[in-house]
Image (cartoon, rainbow, N blue to C red; front, side):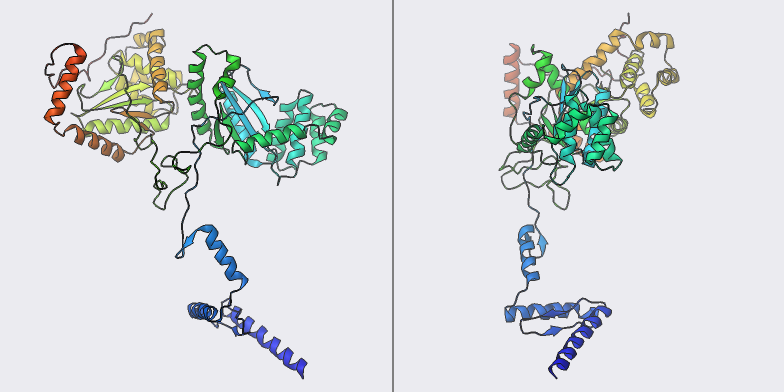
Amino acid sequence: MKIKVFVALIAGVAVGFAGGWIGGTRSASSSGTGQVVIAQDSSAKGALKDKRLKRLDRDGVRGPRDRKADRFKGKRGMADGKQQRQARPVEDPKAIYKFPVENSPVMGPANAKITIIEVSDYECPFCVRGDERVKELLAMYPNDVRVVMKQNPLSFHVAARPAAMAALAAGEQGKYWQMHDKLFASTKARIKLTRERLDELAREIGLDMEKFAQALDSKKFEAQISHEQKMAVSLGARGTPAFFINGRKLSGAQPIEKFKALVEEELVRANAVLAKGVAAENLYEELVKDGSEKPVFLLAELAQAAWHRGVVKDGSEKPVFLPGAQPPSDPFAGTGPVKVVPIPATSPSKGPADAKVTLVEFLDFECPHCSTGAKNAMELLKLYPNDLRVVFRHQPLSFHKNAKSAAMASMAAHNQGKFWEMEAKLFENFRALSEEKIKALAAEVGLDMERFKKEWKSPEIEALVNADMEEGRKLGATGTPTFFLNGQMLVGARPLEFMRTKIDEILAKANQPAAPEAKAEDAAKAAKADGKAAEPVPAKAVENAADKAPAPVPAK
């Protein structure tokens, strides 16, 4: 009898569960009293939830799932059913880290201006991509970049540590980089790095197999790998890949543009140190001698967010700062310090010389974003014909092979009073600026071709472009496009409306009447500085030479 009752009870529960699932709900819940509640259709979900919660509160019964939910809420910072995102510490992107070369494998000239420490794992697909970026940099800067390889085989990549040992064992026989390339090629092809595979690769590159096997079996390089891992982790490089470019950290397989921008910045720093008399072979040690040996975070209790594209954001994509934190200078938003930007007499300009607003642009004729920025500048001139002056300066980047030639061609056109016509043509054809194309564009704008060919690549023209490039680097304009709006740096081709807002802000301040006391004080300061009595300066003290051709630059 008891068996029949038990079977009936089990059957009833099973039917109830089946009915709940067939009705489209997942709805069996038991309380501490043994009660089973079945929801027959989806419309009962809300009522069931309320009923269950009330019963749990009444009975004081809380199951494992409820406790797990509580822990989840606590970990995620949940309040009132909404996730509260916690701002986390943000590393300082300008920090310099001290990562010594030691006896690690090196590729590139010993006197290179740029040393890239590559921290990698041979079983990591992202490391494959990162290594490809490094090879691109070696091709772009063959005389200025060297690479130092550091091992960081992650614990969950079971074949990564033996692979690192295999690479170092090959290095012992003078073939580290051949094995390095073979290992990453295998990972890219999704070939497992088994011991058999490592032996096969060793034979392919012609290693002494007995010596190679002995190194792997004895774990000869275990201490070196552990040391390099410990060093990487101490500097905050827990994952792979990580790169230290003259001590500046870049994490992950970033786009090549990010690598290039950082390399260009570090070339400026390296040249400045070399100019002080530091020997080229000691350059890297000098650059990182005061570097940090632990992660460096931004100010305000280690929680200041990065620029407006930083990692800590709210739902409106605006930066979030913890209490007490101050937003950092942001060259994308134009909130950094105002700089003094020289304007040479030879620089092409358009607009009144006594304009209240001066926009100095550092551009590259092979840069698509520069093309957009240049078009916006011309639109702004139409909108502010009496208040804006645009000054063009050159910053052809080294990896744009025709950019400098185009810059020199534009200055040769400037000698004939047709810079802006040539500028427009060059930007229209930025994807195809071969030497023949540049000549054709010069003819299109009506230049004297004999004079153009004579002056185009002259030392005098090149000196003008080089001077712009050097001035741009001093000002921090190492990428393009970079603009200075009355000395305020703006990076990137900002939208036209953004630029209008900035100009309107400047004009609003410029049009505010100064207090009489301030005027008197300024006049007194000026008189004291000049050693003579202050005199009123006419509103248009400088003749507007925007549309006049400059004096020709002589060509040898």
